[in-house]
Structure formats: C-alpha cells, structure tokens
Image (cartoon, rainbow, N blue to C red; front, side, top):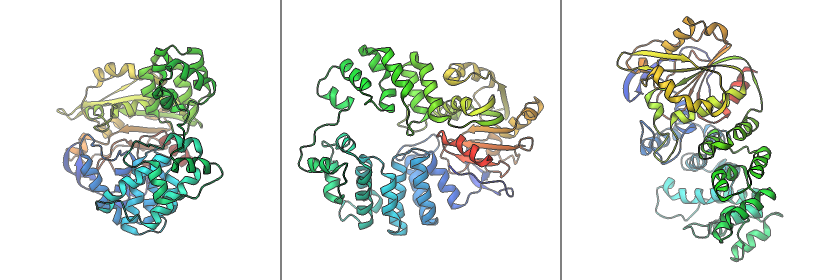
Length: 463
C-alpha cells in the first residue's frame, strides 16, 4: 500500500479503465505502477480484466525500471502489511535477477517467516531465472534461506516438513545448510535422519485416525490450536460435537497478526452461529486504534465488484469491500455508510445512505442495496456531487471510497474530477490490480490493497 500526498494534479495518460482504452487513465511512474500491480495481487491467478500472464509480465517489465530499494520495501510491505505469501518471494528473486545479490539474503531471511516459504522460494527460482534446473543456487539466495531457519522452532519444522512433496523441507536443509539454533538443532537433525515425528496439529492427528471431537477438544483445552485453524474448523468442530462453550472460550482468547478480514468472512459464512464472537475477535485483532471524527465510507457495488478477486478465489471484490466496511465500523469513530453504483447505459450514478449497522450484517443487505442503486459502474465525480447535495459532505471530516477504480465517466473520456474539497482528508482505496485506475491528484491518498492496514495508514497519515 502506498499513497501520494497531494501536490499538483497528475496528468492523464492512455490506459485501460473498465476494460476500455481511454486517454483519461491515470499516469504513473514506474514505482507507482509496480505498487499497483503487487499490492493486491495473488501470483498466477487471473483477475476480472487481466490474465495471470499479463499481471506477471507487467511486474517483470517494471522491476528492472525501479531501484533495488523500492523492490525491497515492496517485498516487506506485501509480506507484513498485505500478508501475501508468494508475491514477496517473487519480488526478492526478481531483485536478484535484475539488480544482483546486494540485499537479497537479508530480504529472504526476513520475509520467509514460515519453513514452507523456503520451499516456495526454491521451487520458484528456476522459473524466475528462466532455466530448467534448480542448481546451481546463487550464494545470496542460499544464504538468505539458511538464515531464515533462525526464526523456526521444532514445532514449525515438524509442521512444515512436507515429506511427500517433490521438494520437501529436508531437501531445502540439504541444499542451503542452515546453522542450527538452540531451539531447532534437534529437530533439524531428526529431519535429516528421517526421525522427526509429526507435529501435534489437527491435520496430523486426524490423518493418524484420531477421533475428530477428541482431537479438537484436547487441542483447544491445551491452547494448541492457532487462530487461523480455529476459524477454519468452527463448522467441522460443531458437526463433530465439540463443546460450544469451549469454542467460544477459544475465540475469546484468540488473536493473530496474520489474520485478514477475509479469514473472518469465510469463518462467518461457514459457522454463522459464531457471528458475534467472530466480530468481537475481528475488532480485537484489527481495531487497535480509533480514527476520530466523522467518516463517509462509500462502497462501490458496481458490476465488476461482483467478480471473483481471482480465478482460484471463492471471494468477490464485493466481499473484500464489505469485509473492509465491516471492519471500518470498529476503526472509525463515526461512520456514514454509502453505497454507490448506477447505470452504465445512461452514464448516471446512483447512491444511497445506509444504516450504520456494524459487522457482518451488511452482507445480508446486499440484494436490497443493489435493488436501490443498480449494478452499473461507479461515478466518483457524481458521487461527490450527490454527497454535497444531500448535505452529507458538510457533516464529515473525511471521505473514504472503496472501489476497483473503474470509473465510468473516466472510461468514457470525460475529464471530470471528484470534488474532495469539503473534506479535511480524502482517500480512494483500489482493491484491484489493473494497470491503470483513477489518479487525479485531488485525493489526500490513493491507496492500493485490501488488508486491514489500509485504515491504519489513514490513521498514520493524519497524525
């Protein structure tokens, strides 16, 4: 995620918006364009308007044109802010390919926070270097992956050994030779000697034939079930007869910096009877600060927002936007929730002020929302004019728009610019990975991405 503070109005350029080539697309520097394509990207998965090959070709085109420092920062942000797994590794390997070994080892050691990521890096290496074989492994990449083992303990090594995979963890150890630490020396030795017992996880226990209810009950009582595993198994535990009281107690204690709003959405859809507990956990995990003042949160519900985020995803852009809207209810002191779409044929926007219900309840309102505003594209200029006409702009300190930046007015070549002057600050959040989007220079920040950190950035830029 990156934002560009208001300086002068950006120039328009020719690009694709809403599937159309238009001279009204935003003009980006190489760094800005690379940020757009990485911050909400799942490698090897196509999006609504762009194929996976197009996305990766765009990244490969841009990486040689930016400085090594930019690539390092992007890799760190995509891992620790956006919580992506493959994109930061890909960036680190591309850094080596185009800019040499400087900084590569330290970067890999930082971003490979799980042992299986070292396997991902080696599996990806021949693809990036455009060769058929893994060996020889460059010295800096070997060094970085070896150093990554300093953060792994015996439990992680056992959990991610992946013995049945073509490239297993013991292969990585034999290839990069990590220096054992006090916490993993025995586990590494047992791994190499094929004597490492399986980690005490729900997967290993169930694979060994253990009873599901007994396994989950014990792991919950011993506090050995991680937050993500807890969310993913709520329905399975319920169906197996695990005590509801035990599960609600675990939810009350759980917390994880690696959870995302979509993890909560998936859990709520599979186990709606835990909605209240999941909302409490979501607020506890993400809403670690409160953003003061009144915020207009405008959510794009246009047709393209209904598309899946990628071919391999079960979630749409609408799901992402609604999950962020649910989270916003906990992070902003006062929220005016607006939904916006319209008619592409008539080039006319439609907008509605919704109730201020927090949490997952807004997902239940989606059909009613679309019935009022239609399924056409977003019209940011018209939205801002409507907010002024309705008297809402005068009541708000900031405007936040969540969209996939497919402005229909811009796509049709109209050089109309959203009036953000009534607000102290204004932000447009783009959850797509398109080459171009709305970029007019009249927003306090134009942000790309879809993690909870979006709102933390808003808090930081205003302090």
